[in-house]
Length: 132
Image (cartoon, rainbow, N blue to C red; front, side, top):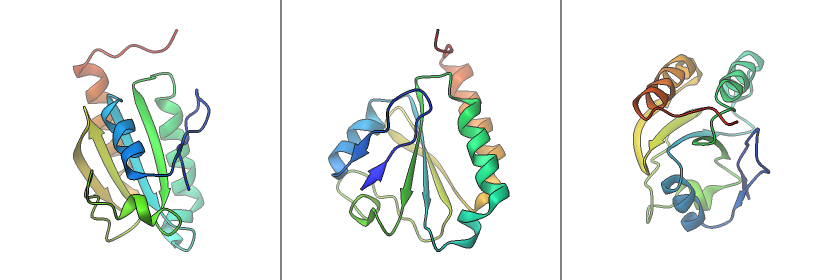
């Protein structure tokens, strides 16, 4: 089962690829993180701290969502090609979705600053406001 992590809402669970596809299409910007419990770089404490800080930086924007997948526990969602072809071959792996489309992907934990830059560009482009 897949659980989305969100600082300001209750966790949402997706059991079917269509549920995830609707979630991506219904949010302005979604950052998807693919990892596994056995992946050393995915479990690196510095990486996890930096990723947590990245999520926290955008927690005041309801239009910005972060979702996390364990590729082994969620293979039905990760390997689905009917709605989105994620094409995950290495982890950690990130996909950035904007207006329902995958617009950028990164492999490895060294791209958190790039992700932050892209999300900030979305905020500026669409003039997104922080939650009241």
